[in-house]
Length: 199
Image (tube, rainbow, N blue to C red):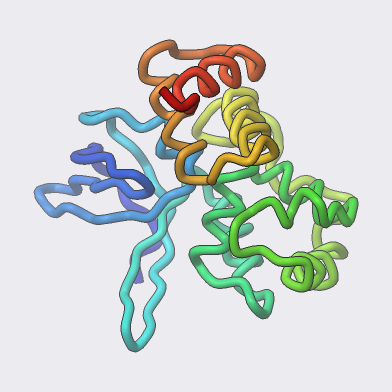
């Protein structure tokens, strides 16, 4: 089984990237935080998980081993599939997911497309005790800036609350990052609204 890959970013798609590992291109579905930071030609170490089903063989990638473990913990919950788990990690930072589960914040969890009230309740019921009293993500252990990822996820959350779809919110934030680099959440939201406003 493939547990980790190290290679160069070959191509970036809407929710996936192709990692060139010694001439072989691996297509990885990844959380938005990783996708937003990836640049063509950049060398990445990606922690991976293979999902094999009768009609599907997919490879998922993560910026840290801890993020991968959270993904696997969410998969253990009935009703949570790989796409829903990735959507959670893409909409919120991993720390925010743990916090929402421990604090039983149903409103936050159900903002993610595909996560209904019953599914969110199962997440809380089955994972709350595992997250209590510890943080899976110590400061400084992520491959990417935690504060930067937090800002990006906050911007996506704000746009979702304003009624925009997850895909268009991600695309807007991605465009802003390419054009402007690091901005505060407020600055990102303002720029995103200008991009998303109907002409």
